[in-house]
Image 1: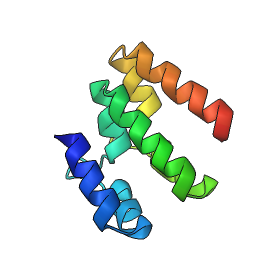
Image 2: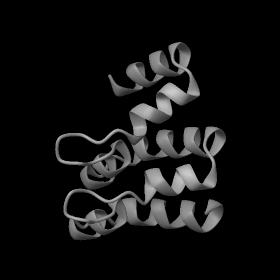
Image 3: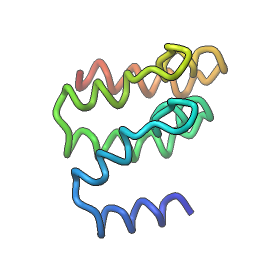
Length: 99
């Protein structure tokens, strides 16, 4: 289902509109990347990473991927706390490659 939503958004929204949605925080002050990292959704992380590296500046990528939640924790830290080693490795590889 998420794949269908992403495909629709990519076809019907501008890069700025998608960026705005990705950077928007929910009621717990968490962005999409943070939520995906916390839940261990590496497929979602990969889609977000691929799109972001094509469409966003390094500063915007940092804002998205290194964002902090309402408890001042990053997605990397939260993935560590939840024992999501596959997520940690993905974030590490991407950050050393692109940031």
